[in-house]
Length: 331
Image 1 (cartoon, one colour):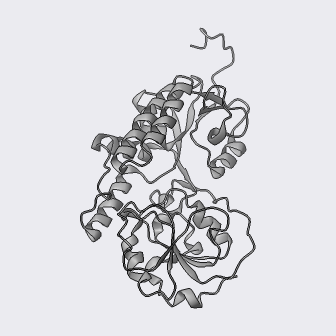
Image 2 (cartoon, one colour; image 1 turned 60 degrees about the horizontal axis):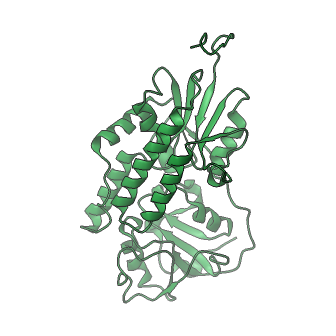
Image 3 (cartoon, one colour; image 1 turned 135 degrees about the vertical axis):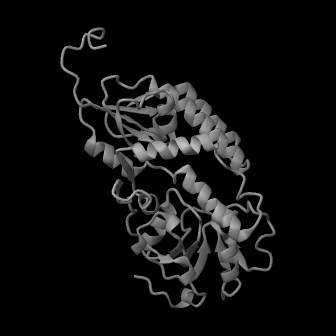
């Protein structure tokens, strides 16, 4: 292949970054690590601004058709059941990965890949003979199944908690590839804990600290869906002196909060006004951006280890007591 392409110099250590949507933590990492000879590949729409794929440095945007189809599919299934959504995401992630794979520099001896593309690059043989690192955007499929099953065991049957299970072959393939990966890269503390000794734990990019407005209201970020554990919040909200501030859609049914005083609120400017405590007992969270914003405002967060934050940034969820809404001190 060297002769065919007229390459005279010996094969050097070159890295191909196969990237998906930008996370600021990963953008900083790529900007720091990528060398001039390394390759940066990302999805993109021909003629459109990179938008969510705006990675630093010279990036080759490819897979335009597959990217467009993925975006259209995400819109179509936005309000569908979890099983329908996740199956669509996996199917279109595969199509985008296959389109990007054809652009990987054959001289690359190491690949840094987005987690969404990992099994599909392996399916095409792109990881054979190469080392690779994985930029994690979610828990491994096996861990997602385990956490959802644990919630189902506590809450019983639900229209949403068991509506997605990836095929066992895919779960096994991802697990095997993650075990082979040279490094697991993530800012998510819960994910990093699954890979002791092999995880590179990045620091979450925090929004600038804003002016703190005194507040003692309690909020639930939602949506109201079983994996977010609204059942635990509901039991505590019944003892609050003020209505629970409620965000997100009512995916578990519009009558879920019947008998509980709630105040519906939407995310936007001032969404944190008056809030002093956030209850977030979700089984898993991928990007805790709103929790980071709340922490920057001095809001006290009660969460589980699935939230992704540094344990020093939140308090264990069961420790919350309704009277804490009045007594918690904020900086």
